[in-house]
Image (cartoon, rainbow, N blue to C red; front, side, top):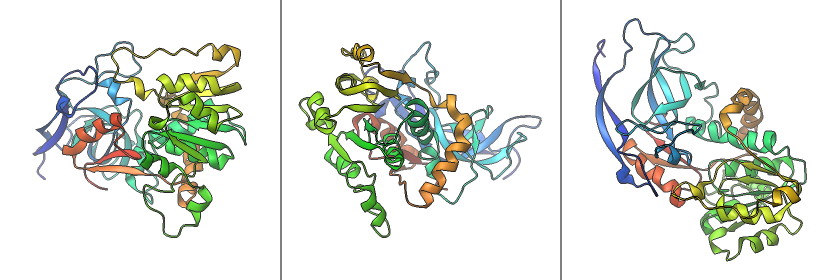
Length: 363
């Protein structure tokens, strides 16, 4: 390609701020022009070709006008921003060279110019699928790891409950907790997802050549479809007659209220997300917070980027477990940038099974 030559660059644009449930029509696909070479004299920047983009629940909040949040709102008329995996095409940054593979924050387009490389990670392990760096080896994997080990301080034999347990984070928390020696129950929103969560980890490991993507994967001790439960408090008492020691919170709302009634004294709650609330203009109240006092429960919110200094330690643990087949990961991959809006919107209706990824160009 000639120096300074422009190429077409397909982008996913947020058209306007969103109120209520987001729709595909809140986004549009546009084609712009971009250069794949940095300008002479630029420093500290890289040009990347995006390979995989990550669809994550927290992105819903960025589609609305927010003030005082830990992340900035998206800019209407501009490409959406999120985690992704990319290949470096040109670099004026001393730590990156052409051909390097990276994961971190990028824009939803075919090619991006990244001027702030803080929070970018160079990919060292390429003997696993590159898409894993949007999930098990990226932000969701780190979220599962630090939420369980750093926030919840687990002990072997403790009873663990995970909501949204078939999602990008939940499926990993459950497997990590099982390998640690805990009793694990997960909730999900369909029979298909529940059957994925059930069946023993031992059975999974004995199946030659892997198993069906949607069945017998994660090795939870029990799992239930919350949509089929008339009373969540009763459901939790069925699976936790002696109470819940650790709750990994992904949902909020009525589920959190029911969990508080079923926590054991000195139980721990890692507040990772509350997806049931993201599309509500008026969030639901929680009625049973006094349980925090009477049961001496510790409930702690956390943001994964506060713990990225632990990423090398996390990789040391997780890479061998992936290679030995002790941990598996389910991805739901949408092909092509044009299908990215649909993939993102599907998160909020539970359409995805596993980690939702968009393959822009497969690496």
